[in-house]
Image (tube, rainbow, N blue to C red; front, side, top):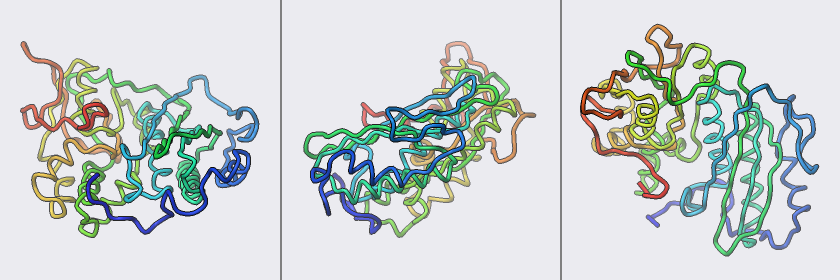
Length: 333
């Protein structure tokens, strides 16, 4: 692992009372009071299953975070990880045009993991859900081999308007972003080099991302033709829209200058470009619109055009293909 500086927030994973000293019911009795409810929650956690009011169409998504792969204990507290796994799932719901309504949470952990870390983690989960107006519906607890800690979240949402897919962009649409680009990736670079004080906001966005959740359903109602959240980087995620829609997305590098300027002094010119084009875990929303349908809060960074003869659908920056491909779980970059 790269050199790490420990955040002062929250207990370490191996300090305090190990989980092996409690039974599952005792642990749940300590965790469940940390989660809030929702008017849509008919039967709260504690029974065999929760009961939730839903719409005719329900959005469902899931994601998993693994210790040592998706986070380091030295960099992120339990509450940080709780916040992050909630936001990354709720952003997927918003990117479909949905409004998040509830989450199911699973913790798979080495019995040596500390109770204090788990409660800190649960507080982070509960706070992130409360901020989004989302209920924790329940989940599961399981033990794991030594050193293994995994957190999985399944998020549900309702569709009050049209669903927005990746495949609806058409030539002539504008490509727009709601939120920031590159901040979380810059924060990761600063953590790797022990330089957190060079841009505390970027480090905070790496630990606790922010997603414009309410902008998703508003964009859907405004006429978004394609949308997703920037979880794996602008180039990789934008290319997904381009391929699914059968278009070329032309990004204007000049339109990314505010994002580059925000982090350039902290990470350098080259790394700033890499962060903005390829940085993941940002969870801003990326969408295409007819030019006249662009809603407030979105900024145009490019346009969609037809695929030329001999060309493939994809994303270009100032007319050129770029090597910044973004995060891939199995290739590792």
